[in-house]
Picture 1 (tube, helix red, strand yellow):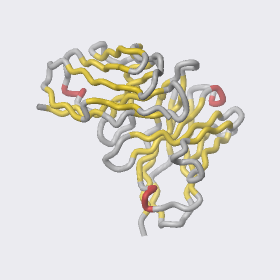
Picture 2 (spheres, helix red, strand yellow):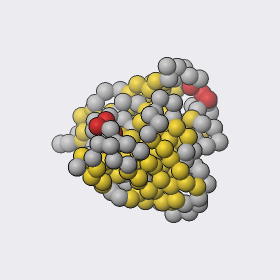
Picture 3 (cartoon, rainbow over the protein chains, first blue to last red):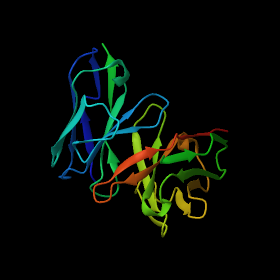
Picture 4 (cartoon, each protein chain N blue to C red):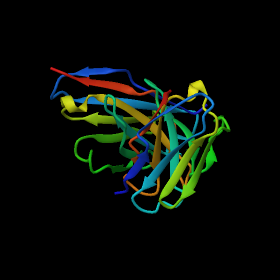
Amino acid sequence: DIQMTQSPSSVSASVGDRVTITCRASQSIDNYLNWYQQKPGKAPKLLIYAASSLQRGVPSRFSGSGSGTDFTLTISSLQPEDFATYYCQQSYSYPRSFGQGTKMEIK
Amino acid sequence: EVQLVQSGAEMKKPGESLKISCKASGYTFTNDWIAWVRQMPGKGLEWMGVIFPADSDTIYSPSFQGRVTISADKSTRTAFLQWGSVKASDSAMYFCARESGHGNPWFDPWGQGTLVTVSS
């Protein structure tokens, strides 16, 4: 099974900051990597698919990169609505797996 | 609009059976897999398994194999997750999600979630 590890587990940042979250796979997953945002009490929402493709309707301040085992999600200028938990997920093989999550908090 | 609508919150006693549902609309139900994902209180997302409604081909996570059953009804465009005997440790939010993007898939959209509470 493929293990996904995110870092950091939490990040404290201010509105306007540039923030990067990393996700590492336990083996190569090419670009089979997706990113989701989840707000409290809500379902996750797809942000980035296939490592770097922006889902329709998602603001362009979100971007993704990486291939193989190392991936990043970057928010270029944090907005108040971006404070949430972010998860990476691999779709390279079954069982699918998620990272443990990164909680974005207001500094 | 592609949409997944899940059944309402459930309260059960240990040992009772339970079946929750996920009704799809806005796309061809038999073309895409539907996954179930668990989220325990204050914790992360755990992939439980997936079903292809066209032929009911099902793949389970080893962590959930034998504990739950995933099924689908093409006539009602509905996927199901069921337990024969729930435990307190099954208390969680359960999400369904469409796995789309053939060849390099992702989960979108998601259902709104079904909260399951198991308590004596």
